[in-house]
Length: 314
Image (tube, rainbow, N blue to C red; front, side, top):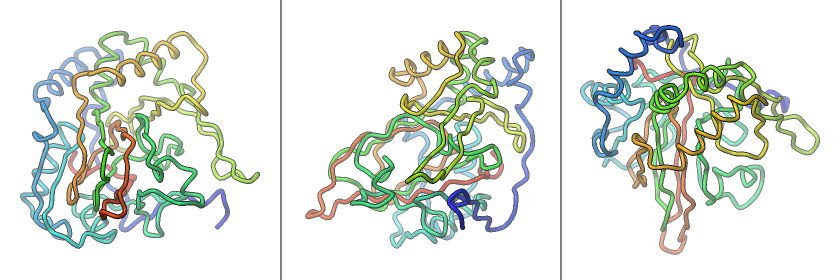
């Protein structure tokens, strides 16, 4: 495998099929469709993460009722918090749980294990130590795979807590559809700018003179051609991110940063405990810094699985 091929798709079955509902709502010329979709989206917003909690008895064998409850939250909010008291969860369990919800196409990356599931924990050295998810430093707002090409669009993500840190490690999450509504209501021109194919460019990733990933340009908001649902490609990192040099794009990028730094309605904060996990259709998220205490057995370990599929039925 060459360096340019080091990130790949692990397909455990085949492409999922989805409808194209809601796609019309994201056409700036389709105001009635947008208003109808917006009304439905805002009608039942959760007040806290607890309103999105689903108990799952065994992640390796979720029941039909549990899967239906998970899917219902994801259909409306694009995210759900699950909790399972069953122990012995490993990477294979995470893959099995994903398959039960229609998630078969795992996206591998430079630091994931061979099965495509990443073990997010503090790395003492090597390549992983160069990437913030493998440190205890804060992670800024982003959607996973913002540097991926369109054919490797990350549509869903799962975070499962094996062990938590002694302090810190809280996640904040925001359904990207709520951000879209806020921006479009304030200035539809921002949405037009953010949907430009050159809106945001991530430079190439070079390691020891070898190009691991080519530069990737693309829109911030787009309508996913496979699902017809709204997709967000975003990172709040200011280093190594090039925004299209026009006034509306600069204004829109600044407004996003302002909103994410505020107490915008819809932002949910939660610190995962062992046995808990977040399943989402790749919503915006971040993570605070944390402190491990190895002597007390509190060394944070999170399994992360990223998929080219959306959760089935959402």
